[in-house]
Amino acid sequence: MADMDNFKEATAFGVGTPQKTIGFPLKGCSNLDWGMKNRLSRIFNPKDGKSLMLACDHGFIMGPTGGVERVDLSIVPLMKYADCLMCTRGILRSVIPPTNTIPVCLRSDAGSSILTNLNDNVVIDPEDAIRMNVSAMAVMVAVGDELMEAKTMANLYHTVDIGQKYGIPVMGVTAVGKQMARDAKYFRLATRMCAENGANIVKSYYTEGFETVTASCPVPIVIAGGKKIPERDALELAYRAMNEGAAGVDMGRNVFQSENPAAMIRAVAAVIHKNMKPEEAYQMYQDLSK
Ligand code: R5P
Image 1 (cartoon, rainbow, N blue to C red):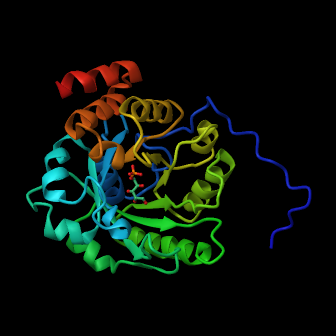
Image 2 (image 1 turned 135 degrees about the vertical axis):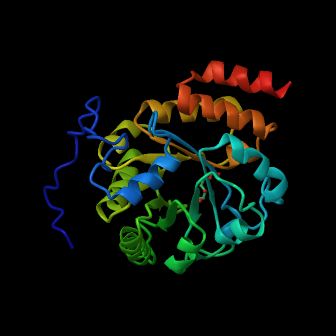
């Protein structure tokens, strides 16, 4: 156990002084190998270093939740608006057309359902990820979970070893237990632990003080959208995250549970890639919904 006496609180985040990137648009990725950079460039548009990832992996833990009952009907038509698709191998093989050319961030761990607490987690055989030609592997990490913290961090660590071997970036997915505070201090800890253990991308949630989370994480952060909120609020969430240092969003429910998912994903894309203000993006959503 680390000595926590006189533990110095972190304050020197250097917010406003972006980490330097040399010869590659994504922070912390300049020293990676060609294959890694090429795959990252498929996910994050090389022109602006930003990404709109469309998440539809919810069924791996929630089953056919609202909006992903039929991925073929709800998600496939939206893929053309996204920079990347995040899904499981089951959905990839059964529903996503192999003629699809947008990159895939593969949900690469599996374990508990929503019926229980997180109780075990396994990671995919990397050869299967390679067979599916994925551009990234996503593995969940439960920082602060007494039972699963070390196991899930070991999963991430192991997946990074494999990713390094084959040039496949790994996304650490911060999972927040129901009892944990979703504050900046927690996300600084969880995202930084993912990066320190080798994640090339980290998925977080937005929180007050988010700029300190992105500043203290040396690799790109994307935010999950979280539970469905009004479209205007979801666009505001994306705008704030992007302007406080996120490199993108990995959004699911706020797109596929929207009244008009195609309009919503296009409005989110405008926020991500054009830095469109929330009011204007919401107007765009409304116009496209007519
Ligand atoms: C969470 O672990 C899932 O992997 C989702 O992909 C993620 O939460 C993003 O989806 P949503 O925007 O619905 O939260």
